[in-house]
Length: 586
Image 1 (cartoon, rainbow, N blue to C red):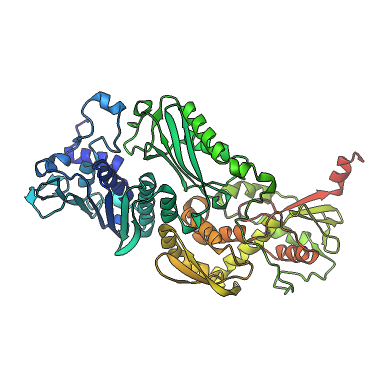
Image 2 (image 1 turned 90 degrees about the vertical axis):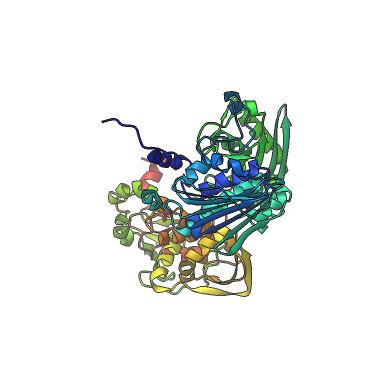
């Protein structure tokens, strides 16, 4: 039987479109503050915002007689007619946010407008309390407690407090980058996370991203007709292997638009490898009648009248800003995000390994383990069937006396049945991965103490995640101690690493930890795979004959020498029959 939903149920369904998690509450409150002209915005959260979110601003405030109206659905001061939808210059306009928040939390608001007394009102489960006089200065303070207390089904889908805290930090970071002229403060569980004063965009990027971003930014200023673009691009030192530091603003509003992102990436295309992502924070200004922001309740998506014009404006502007890099490419060596590798000078045989002084390594002896190999990464599962039906290698041994390196990338050696080619990077990656996984159980991964401990500062959200994974990093050979706010001292690193790139490696490991559910069977595998990829010898690293022999020996001492943790092949074997066919001998 079809029946009309109750008002209470309708309000909770509507709230689900706007209020997904604590970060979305912060988003709606900050938007209201900015629309109210606030120049100082303070945010306090507890337990990642699940227990408490409190926002205080110095905006225009809400008169006492308008407080009840402000919390009713579809009540707003920002639009009045249909035509207003096409000339919106405020962040909010739907009149849904406050009503949605009050339907799933306990709310208290204190506000005072210019030259007026303050007033207070409480709302529980959507029921408005009485408006009462209260001491207050100009501005508004809203306190939200026990988010989703009356919708347990939604509450159980929230992540851990630390994960929700990361999302709150990212949300505040977006506003801080979009409005560098405003002051923002963020406090979490009594600890100051951000304390930003009004400043220029370049300084704001350094303060909300990472102090290391200083001197790594390229300015962008571009105007074409009634469109303009400004902001900063990261040089190649700021390239990461995971998206997440790409910020596009439209008239100061953070948005997500694939075509606009594509315009920026196309400008970078000659500078990046596959799977690499640059940093950028750019603000595109277009006439309000050229864009429709009334597309989705979250207002992250927009619709342009002329999308391809937007695409070409972004692409042209970014290409122009990147000219200082592009014009110096012949003399430019792209920085290596991974650590350089120091091979041990003395080989100590372990169980399952062989001494490099032997005549050769038997490929046949490794076949069974290769057949049983199951790659850790989900996308590598396609290889499983290949491995199960993999033909056994022809008889032969890797000739360690005749071993060469090609283009500082591949190791080549003859075998009795033909030729074997080994990718040096993924080979070393497999070695380090298995050693790291074993270390989680045995704490056996060797460490090297740094002569001078290195002090490293992390962004607040990365630092929070670092505390989560620190016990596992220590098992892998890292030794670090907390040293002030968002800062650690690194005293030791795994013996396979050379010092100098610890921060990049750790940040990549934190990124992969956050992607655990999507890519890896366990977060230990995520950490081990990320570490092994970043710490392994790279394509372009020149190896001595002894180093190549050592690498091959250790590879065939692993359980699964044919594929790296990400599913890429390590060894390619060319038989004599195939070589003869290539030369038309048969």
